[in-house]
Length: 92
Image (cartoon, rainbow, N blue to C red; front, side):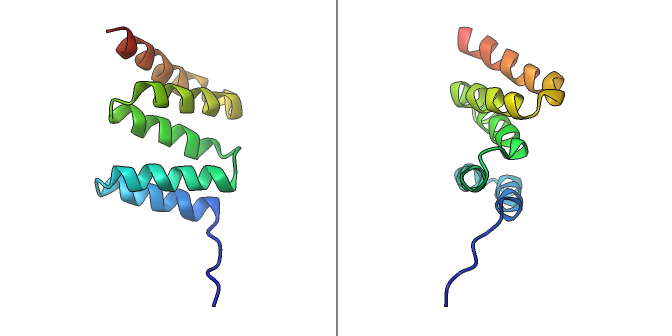
């Protein structure tokens, strides 16, 4: 019996669940899988960037945020905040 491939939405929900339960590595992996399934999934890029930021992984956070901004320019206000905060953290 073959396992049905998970959709990007299933993987995103899995990531959010892992994150809420403090399983951050599993959450990052699930976000990455959602992005593998759909490279243009801005929500996964955005929330992956926020998780990286919260884990003090500023370079990764900024990279994910920049990709999210490319995909969802209407979210610029929220995404720019992450990018600017990463820049500040990386300078200190």
